[in-house]
Image: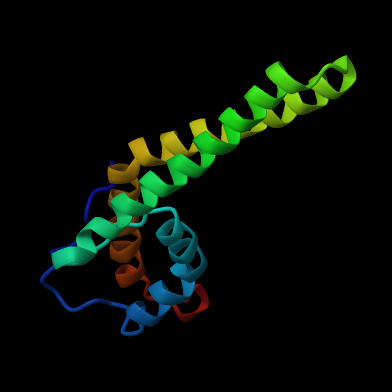
Length: 129
C-alpha cells in the first residue's frame, strides 16, 4: 500500500502539478473515456455515460464474436478457412475477456489515478517534472 508522506491539507510541493497530471494522463484518459473505464466525476445524466459506453462496447464485442462463430459453424465448409476464422473468433473472445478484466478493476484504476495525483503533488525537483 502507498502511505501518504504528509497531510493532504498542506500546500503541494509541485506548483505545476495540475498541468503535469493533464500532460501525463491525456492519452490514457482519452482511451479509457471511450470505453467507459475512466473514473468520471459527472453529475446528472452524465454519470450514466460511462455505463452506456460499457454496455455498447460489450454489445459490439458480442456481436463480432457471435457473427464469427455462426459463420464458422453454419456457412464455411473449407477446413483451412474455418481454422483461420477460428483465430479471429479466439482473438475477439480474448478482447472481450480483457475488457471485462478492465471493467472489474475499475475501482483499482480509480485508486491508482488518485495516487498519481498525490505523487505529482509531491515532486520537488525540476528534473522530474
